[in-house]
Length: 187
Image (cartoon, rainbow, N blue to C red; front, side, top):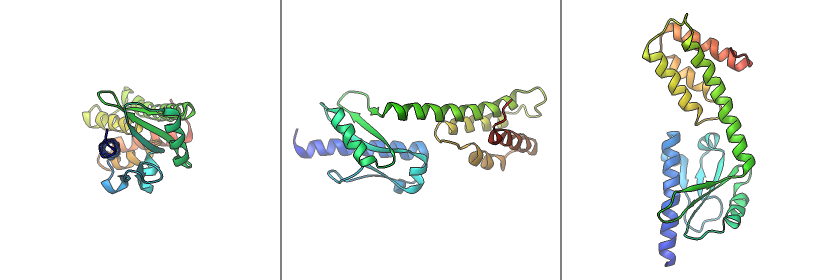
């Protein structure tokens, strides 16, 4: 493959990763940028706002044969204080992400912590005394659950914005649930 073609192939993967992050976290395009080919450092540059949501430093490799040990070493060097993530792709294959096992365990821990907080809110919806049987309340809680999967601890910030658009009884219940979650009390 000609050098121009291989650089174009690598650039396509970087652009795909950047666009996926922009879409997944609903960020403006300036917050996630693909760097030019051959530039030193990480392949995807994140703004401070994006970095708060995305703890990774990305190295992208779109090649048919990859020595992932050396590619991951390059990723670690560029990562500084962030979690290194090697994004690898080859023709007619799935795109893969290689991360350290310790980072994988931390992501599982964060996901579980968020799921536990969401389950507290969902339990409040299932209680017989719950005054709201509407789809609006259920929908709000499901949207919060979806957001938990994408952010480390979005319950407080996202619930506050949803509360402003809901009925007073839903607001009181959410505030009580947040208070219980923040203090570590669960039902």
